[in-house]
Image 1 (tube, one colour):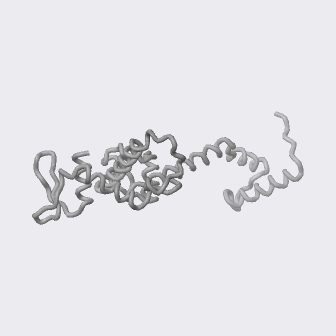
Image 2: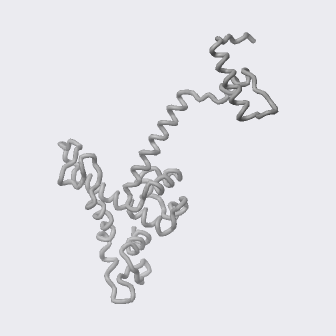
Length: 211
């Protein structure tokens, strides 16, 4: 095997690395040669392509996390857990069974239904917007005061509230105020009704039984 020529400066640097490795990995009862330091550097080398892929994957994950925080009730921590579990878009969350979402770290069964229902309202709002604007070829993409979004396409608080209520509005014949112990009652598929305390509870039941 041919010898490898190194400059004095390179050899000095290898010797410095050998001393550092010896202090960290070997201690007082061993030694690391410059050749060992060179082998360590080769073993731990990462190609530029791998670095680029890692950066691209990180950028994709960051974008996915940010997009999921648009779902009502999903913060950065929950969005990160969803992305780690493979739910990388609002559509993926919307189409998932609540049982699958409940298996994600930090998400319980009731929260899973809330998240899926909130994602569904986003999908409904987007579909309505596309239907309303599908023939408008003059849109410059900057948004205006009439579409409920700012110039960057971010939803206003009014949009978020409208999306949260759209599930209730779409099924307003299946729930109503109650004269019983609970403020509201919801129809179930078996023909019975059940009392609930909040509109969030209504939303969970409607999403579970009538989506």
